Image 1 (cartoon, one colour):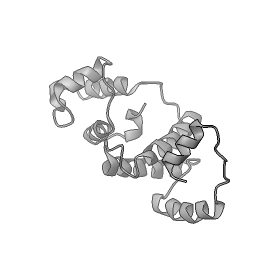
Image 2: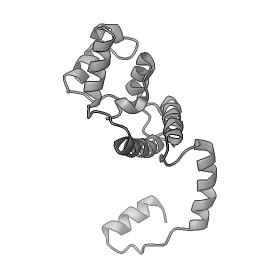
Image 3: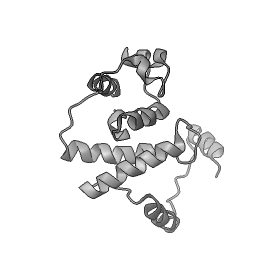
Image 4: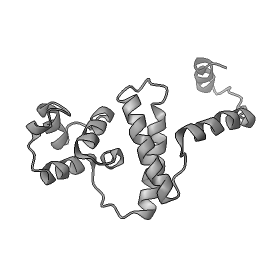
Length: 153
């Protein structure tokens, strides 16, 4: 059944839910696990691998929500966030607050970050009028030498 047919049937409430083919899931999952290197974050080593994988995924996907891997950083980011909440004492800070902290720590002005985003966009982010895009997260993380996860919020 196509996605359109499934959505139409769902609206009509006549959808018959079919059990997934677990063998097909397993056959797709094992190579995915091998390629990613980490799919769950339960240890410090998995946490470190997940951060590296997230960085690589952000480099590949950027802001392209139509990219086939666009959902993978969200999934892995959730795993990292859950691990960090349980094991690492990180003060609650929004991406905007983290960016402000990094700017202050490096004694920079908004205009000093033109290599990451136009000054007007940085001003909007710091004024809480705009979210930090995935592409900017990558650029800021590279600029400041921090893991992308701390700028995800």
